[in-house]
Image 1 (cartoon, one colour):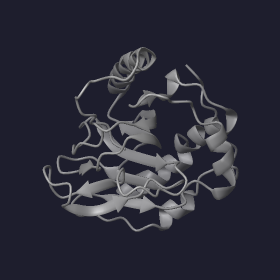
Image 2 (tube, rainbow, N blue to C red; image 1 turned 135 degrees about the vertical axis):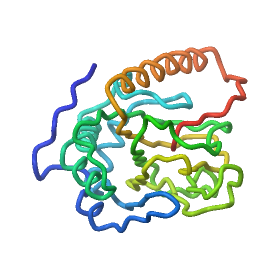
Image 3 (tube, rainbow, N blue to C red; image 1 turned 90 degrees about the horizontal axis):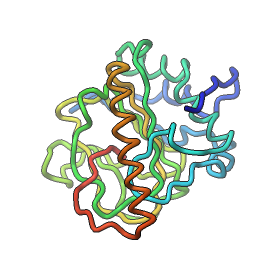
Length: 230
């Protein structure tokens, strides 16, 4: 497993102060959106070092290969300064909670079904790395209900450097209109305990293996929806 080194102070590729300054919306569940969360000066290097993900689905960070700029980016979002800022903003102590990171590079037409995240995921962070998003579809929607994609609280274009944070709960519904193609997103979750982290990473790793296997064999005809955030 790759070791994520903590970045040196003053060198973070993320704008934690922008997070602190962004108001939190609490209804119907706590959420906030931070445009330009990834610093513009770091965007090109991070994209150049982004993992090559040619199949749809979420891939655990330890299963991927990537360069030093992306590694520093991951260290920053898993580091203590970002964790403290999220804890303060959402009013939850995350200091003893493990983190899990998954990466998406491609989106399939079956993705984006309305869902809530697992109750073992306390906080969900989504960071998009897609340039300027021009498609009318593929934009994550925070929703008021589980059965209406147009019952929208907020829509999050997956533009480069944009971050969404929300606190999980039974009414934290989200989804997006079908999109097929490249769609880069990093998902960070604080989870309840180390056992959950082990299980989630194991489950995602097994799934990632079969996604890659299907990719080598040609397009999959599976119709089951993806229920990962993003």
